[in-house]
Image 1 (cartoon, helix red, strand yellow):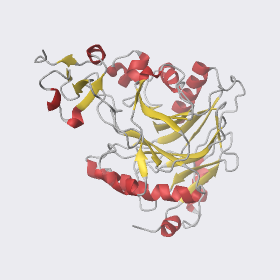
Image 2 (spheres, helix red, strand yellow; image 1 turned 180 degrees about the vertical axis):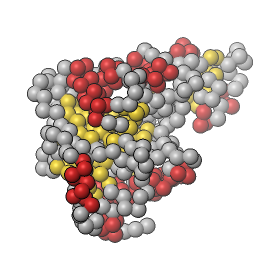
Image 3 (tube, helix red, strand yellow; image 1 turned 135 degrees about the vertical axis):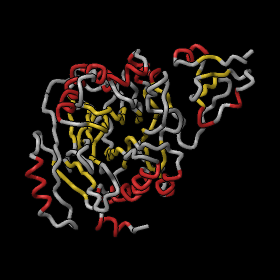
Image 4 (cartoon, one colour; image 1 turned 90 degrees about the vertical axis):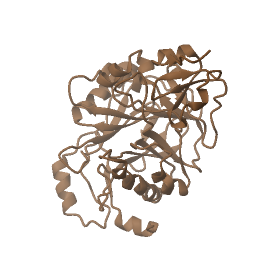
Length: 388
């Protein structure tokens, strides 16, 4: 493994100062090509901040609801329901978005958040990233009454990745929680899906070097790594990150929406923090977008996304709506008590009460749980025929 000093020299960071206007990407990229690569380089990023002064008074509750959300091909096509996107996003204070396709999508989501909440929001987004003609952007959106970019830096960074390990290089910024004065770094990434799992693992493994570099660049401020990792947190590829003390906050459930049934499919989206993370986390979990909207899974996939958000709540923060839309994960190191719960099989969409003969035959990786048979039926499951 490379030492951190080697990494800091060889892994180039792009830094821009955020301005309340758009940068001309072509002009700035010309500067980049003329910059010596072993230095910290100016890179073309489209950074956009909203200057709206309208807004409501901040909540008296301390802490933030922080979300990560892959909004499938945001800005492309005519199927997106931006009002629904705004209704979901309004539940959060700070959102890391993956798969933003263009400025139109960025602006329309921003408008939807302000329309739904009646508050002022800001946004910043990256330059298009990708190895081929297919590119995506990352974006951060935040509620101005509760969050701001850290004033001492005003920077957003894209990892330049000279070894070309990432198809879409991670993107980060430093924020301040205005309710507590907590300072922290948000770093987001969309790991390539590829044609097989082996295409994803090099990027996952490189994240251990990436977060160590962030610790140096941001002078020890705590980092939250979040995004669409296209790999469950139990995969062996995460061993390098886990060995240096990082842990996933989402350990149960799934975040991608099935295209054929009324259920979630894979636990690909997540939030990672170091075991020494100093900010109080009062909960983390999966936000159930179909249940929140009252839509079926196929309608949600078509008009919102094929991913649902994952969230973490700091200090005393709570969702602005009902917490019933969130499946909370156990705290790191804890296991969920499923004693007496209905056990569903994700593969067959059949559920079993504890007194059913096949209850213990459901493979662990296929298990999901419900408080009642009625809850399972609402999710599209049916009770096993051999239950008494």
